[in-house]
Image (cartoon, rainbow, N blue to C red):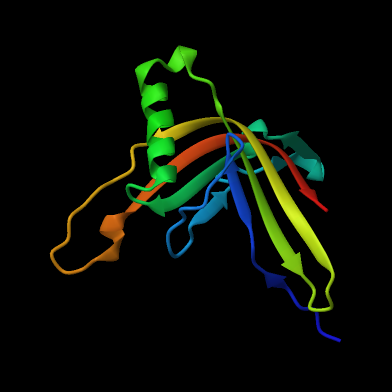
Length: 151
């Protein structure tokens, strides 16, 4: 019998705030830009392995509706960071990816992230041709990924 994966009802929390004003397309995207480990083969076939701590960095792109309560919250946190980085309370995140097997069995993969800072300003534009992207704010936040678990 083939395997089935049904996903839906995922949730994203930033600072314990459940984001509800998500936009279209990939409204939440976690990426890991660095390798977790490095390997180097040396003379006589000897191999050296090293854990790469930068492999714990996770970039989170959030697409929220421009002007929404979530946009206002994220923007206020961004302004706090820009105003005084040394006094900034780092962001936390929890992303729960729910998956079913088509037989009523569920599991949830949970990404717990801490130590978050905004990586860049959300961009803005105006379109005279009905481009819906003008109503989306995209926040990019870098976190230290502490834990990934499947329940």
